[in-house]
Image 1 (cartoon, rainbow, N blue to C red):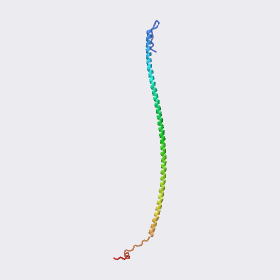
Image 2 (image 1 turned 90 degrees about the horizontal axis):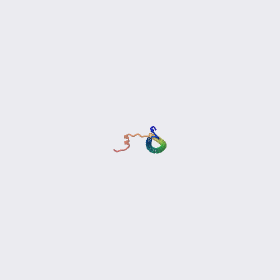
Image 3 (image 1 turned 180 degrees about the vertical axis):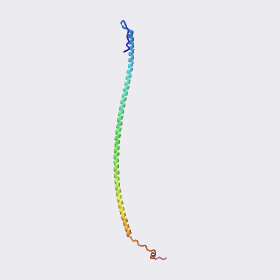
Image 4 (image 1 turned 45 degrees about the vertical axis):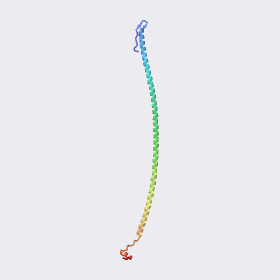
Amino acid sequence: MDNLQRFDIVDNGYDINQVNNEIDRLNAEIDELNKKAEVYQRQILTVSRQFNQIRNRYRQINNELKMKEKAADDVSRMALTEANSIIETANNNAEDIVNEAGVKAQRILLEAEQYRQKILEIKKDLSNQLELYLRTLQDVEVPEEPKFNERLLDYDINL
């Protein structure tokens, strides 16, 4: 309190008017300070309420965010599980398809070999038959063709 008033000394102590004036001034200052304190208290209360509202909203948003992150993680985990299941099924199906194709290919190769064997047999039979026909043809004696005049004589033709 740097602005303390010094009072004049009179017969029975300090000058009463100076003391009363100072008390009035100090009371006015106290009233003004009390008013400011009330304003500040109201501001503190308002700010405190706003802070509490903001903190509660922050907590609510944070909780919602955590729930959404958890839901996103769950969806991601389920999607990964489903994708792995699809891949595994595809791999199994691919293996089945490859195995089935291998079996079909073996069956086709076996049939092709059987056809080849039949063709070779038919070729051999045809070759043998042709040889037999050739031998038969070679054994056949073809008579000589008679001369034209002789042929005419053989027939009694009246002209």
